[in-house]
Length: 228
Image (cartoon, rainbow, N blue to C red; front, side):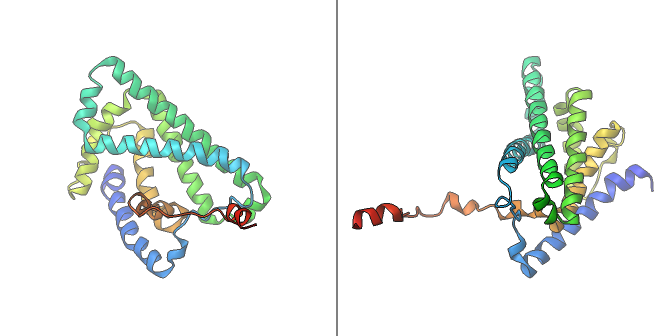
């Protein structure tokens, strides 16, 4: 077995199996740990400058990756017009820098704030390091390997679909640049980390708020003022 076969043909399935098996075990054994374990009450200002750009940046980037996976032919068609390609690439790079800034702020917060450092676990450190490598690899790719959105739609997306079809086409990605390979393997490493870290909190997003019935909120201070 070659290194490429292991990285792109074995690691993805190991990561997916770990996530699918351990995630429900954690949920049913300790469902209250399905949160980001917020430390906002310990320090709020620096958290804002880290959390807001990080979440906005990473959500939009993941959304773009998802679109490239689901409709790669439309991405390639969009990129067929130069100015649209420049807009897409420029937007992706800007979001990458936004995400990187937010992550650096979160890392500095945990490193410099003694109260935050005291509640930081080993898995918090592992997760932050993994995210740092992943974001750096993504930004590096956007900076030094042009038209990443096109090769993602033309090579990475078909490779990911081949993984899901249990017939990995390693040839699609084995000749990509080193940092691109790091980015791909790093994504599967994060999938494997999912059930062991606070990363799992994205599974507990309260999407039921979208369709639940409106709630009546009573402002006690106003009620008391009226009663007086």
